[in-house]
Length: 424
Image 1: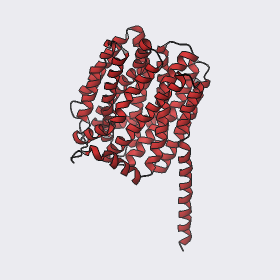
Image 2: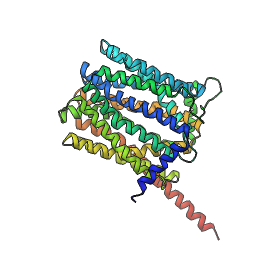
Image 3: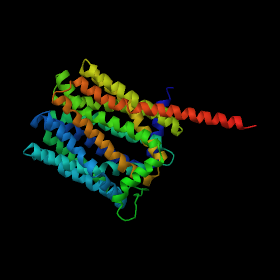
């Protein structure tokens, strides 16, 4: 048993050593993810300090998500026509240009307009990077590669938010945003040369925008398993959207700490997911078929929702960090199995269409979660009631699919028994 984590680490290292395209995309992801998580932590600090932690904060968080919901089909059409590399490069460079303007904004409306522009760039970056990731995965190494991708994101989530809080406290928020802009420029520059051995997936047909959603729904109808991924993921994203304001309020109202300390809570969740990397690699060889991958995904989603609900009972900041670490482990497993199942079920071109449908739905879930914070900010709900609602959104959608999977397993077993009985 002691050798399992090391074996998983060796498996990931072997992918890095054997595939130049994979290494390049991982480096871009590492820089972009780190800066993105710093920005996730920095923007609420700016808005809360200048305009308050009520409606202005909730509105700013929601506005970043709005373009990703409204313009996702256009982004998918652009990526299919031009390939993901150039649009992602331009969008990351656009974010680098917009970030420093936040400190120069004279009022809340201007800040929210800049956040809206950043959200418009995110609309291209998110599906484009997912497509670049999929194209760089070596054949037969999906679970290990997806674990590595999630490890990069969670490593960024561990150190990005605390780095933003520390930089804001020790230097200034203006200097922090300049560093973030520079980081985005570096990530964009790394995409200028085409990654070795990679190719941009393209669709040479005429203007796929109008048919994107129709084709995506056709894919969903043809593969019912994708609903077992998408619906629980949507519920999880609602609770994830609620998590940001919840942690800010928990830190302020229950622990009575300064706004920089909430970045430590964000980092703790990433630390748990990084531990989940080793767990995912330990079980990667046992998740050899679609059935076991789906079971791992559903149970990991269930455990993540239950463990994070316990946050409301945390007696201290340290206890909340510990609970977030525990909840981050199944979250990591759910992410890795989700992307592995998508890659197993769909070819690369169909993955672009699936993400065109799923990403705006996930962003809609995030927005619903963020906006649900108004139920606490405006007074109808206590903080505990608000968090119960958010965690129920994670747990409840999983339960029907666990029952469906069990019933489907009984049907398969009965069919196999009948087949054996017919044999002489």
